[in-house]
Image (tube, rainbow, N blue to C red; front, side, top):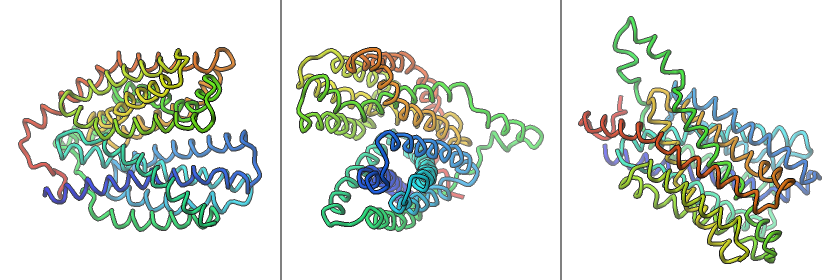
Length: 408
């Protein structure tokens, strides 16, 4: 049992890295595809919205399918189809086919995203200790792998279609090989099936998301809005506000991303010792301090420190929210994760636009104070994790069953 559980954890790591590498491969090929299709930056921005909408739709569909069929079925399908459709943007000859390609690729990538997080919830439950943040760190590692592979593809003179097809083919093989190690589908909990006269009614009620799910989803939207703003505005902040050279400004996002990856590798240990509520609360406080430093400092070195603290603080927040959403109702873990992930993803898409709109009213660095406010609200609302985590630990203590409880 322990060996199969370790294998399932490794497989989940692989799927997170796969998801990050697929998105990263698209990102590194954006300039070449934009030039070949002949579209402007503004048009590209509109197309990226379609990618996001496709991902959101895929998350909602996959969440329900994961609860019905199990992550062991949906996750490999999402991995295969996301890998297979990666090549479509590279093959698109014009604006409309590119729009359709991004919508389709986004849809299946959203399916992969939710199903791998739902499976991660089951693996974490079987381990009976926090491991979610490490999975999210592997997503970042996948993005780094994509950047390295993309650089190799470009230096070899390969076209985007050939390069993306190569990565997609490798992704299909990876998704299929890793599928064998996934945990079996969990059976419905006894509460949903014990009484023939009332079980069906209770199961129907369980499908209605509790109010706490929507609180977790709103917090995810705020945290990921802050993350999305950092992705698009960190380098421009150093260049336009502090007057840093473009070569120096580029390291602003690198500093933020490196701190976030490092934090996610460490967050599970912190959560295991102090609890998920502490990770969310004090992580949000650290992020608020970091982005406030960025907003007010006139010094480049202090801005780097602020971006690093911002990334480190945010790093453990989203994994705690995803994990908590999956624990609220194990029978509806996929649907609940899809709600939290979907609203969070919309927040990430909105982040750059919201900050950009604010720059019409205030300077860019002052617009970042909105992110300070969102992080402060998140810190104050972190108590929403207390009830779920405490209840989970009580159930774990009373059950005394082997770690893997999913075997048929």
